[in-house]
Image (tube, rainbow, N blue to C red; front, side, top):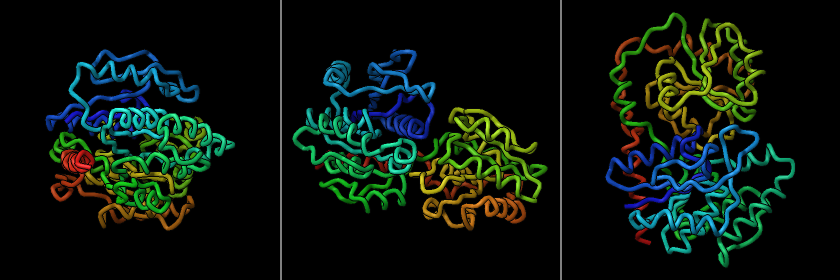
Length: 391
């Protein structure tokens, strides 16, 4: 099977969606399938690898490595030309909300190829909370959508869910990375007209990483270690977490991986027990989570899966989180949920886990967590692809 994946950002850049598509592609290829990516080219230019169709792009001023493009008919010609010497495409997988979605739907419909769409982002939170006049922004996106869908275009979107539904209605299958996000999308009619039931396919964890961690004994730390991994932006609530750390009475150590606009404020707030590791590649971030006693996710009503939470649980690392919806998708006993969103509640959760949940040193028992392996998730994804192809 040849899967053509349309991405928002180049797979070589950092980000949760990029980690997800790279992992999916690796395990599809291990299973004998062919994967090709379509995305805006890196700032340094196209990659010399036929698996990547890198389209001319512009720099995103606010994020040093991100790029964007305005979808045009010429891009479709570039894609078709790049695919001439590759196997025929069996399925288009859109893993994008903006330019990638516009190109992916247009290309799939023009070539009569089945299309599945993984929804990765809470546009209703991210866009509406960061753009002064989101309605105007969605109207602009509606221009792309109209170009993409042609006669199938239904109406000019004015909200995030209007916009996402405009695409989803024309997908063969819509995929969500978690049960709670699938419920939100369904509630807002972001579903396929052909298959209204959203397929839930979370991103897994690399099998090789899990096997390596399973054979690495857990170390007993002098004081419990809490890891926080993510982007330093307001919706991730890093500053609120650091406020909670300052209010905790237990002796604890904190490691923080990531970077972003709030770095200066975060470092100014942090005590001597907090270490900043900077932005880490996937493998090193996984190591940091595995080496910690706890993983903290402080965001609320924003994550569509919460990949670091999934990764932590799969590695046997206890999770502290504030989002009840994310918690509902986790195994019982694998997490501690704060009582509310305040720093006081976070401090109490840190103290409680330091007293009651510090893991023992020695071998990790991970066999019961086999469902988190990416190989298992890939089998599920292939079932979804076959359903779409058999439409």
